Length: 304
Ligand SMILES: [Zn+2]
Image (cartoon, rainbow, N blue to C red; front, side, top):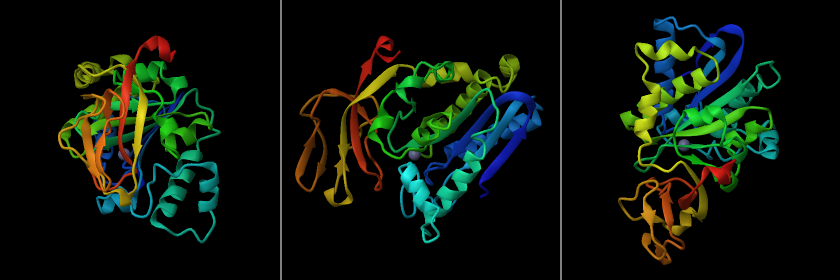
């Protein structure tokens, strides 16, 4: 697989939209969605304003269908670490990936676009995974609203070294867009719909282009039916490999949990929910540092 999935150089004066899939190598729904949208733009000759770029994230991990090879490529984006990785003796798999992505994305940081977005497409290991992560300051942004998905306003504060936080300082509106269960066709479908809405909301394509084959807005609403609007993190259960953490079966995102409920086990015994709220990102894969989160729904007044 190539790093650059496609580039559309459209009419001057429009936005920059960078679509990124596979930053975690076992999450390829985003790549499939990006290819589908780029293909449709080509086939239907849809006029584009500005620049649209599709990128694949962790090429080596994608080739092996693994989240990562040596370290998580979405937990390493700090100024200090990025600087270190440019040192020649950094030769781990993700060092190479990080440098390549850094050069490709940051090449655009000083270009004169009215808007620069980066949409980082992910999928999760639990059911009903669809949601958006943006910094709280952007939670009310029109482009975020158009996606009609639950917005987690402070997850970026609990996860260090995410790409979206790193790109904020360079003037990007960067968001993580979780499409749902890894390997599900629904995740691809949701990502495709979300990409169309971002392209419309950013001014990259015309609002009325969807009449014949894109039903993105309706689809997005269907996928978020019965899910909360805005949530924030109440509790974060961090784990290490030595914990032997195993999540109880059957939890999905935003499922209500009660304080004291048995949610997992580890080498120390039962793991119980320390607070009541909504289950979030229960871990059903072997790699990862986050066992689960508990979130709570908040009102829009608390966000803006
Ligand atoms: Zn991911």
